[in-house]
Image (tube, rainbow, N blue to C red):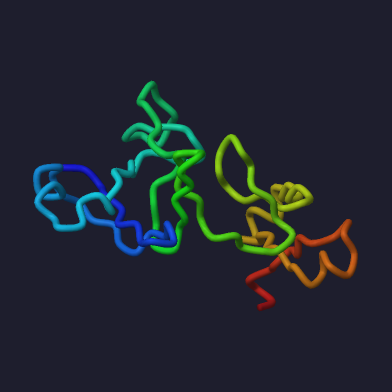
Length: 137
């Protein structure tokens, strides 16, 4: 069994299923289905233990509904999350224009995390990551 993504005329993923290749071949629109690997993220193949292994990555990323299939890159690319983010050509993942700050041990222990705020970035392009404290939210 393998995972297959159904691609529409705009090259968007509309469905992901688990099936045998023989089943895909029987579909009237069989050419609209592309194999995708559940173990592939960012152009790297991961093993059962969640660690990179020697497996062959397939199409840069596991397809999801709304992802776009890029023929030239032979890659599934997720929707762009924010206007300011740019595509990493190696991983086919979107990246923020500034790096996310590292959490301190205390912040980690308190369950804090960072989220991106596009409005903050547009107001001051040296800012963008907002520290969230779930105890305050």
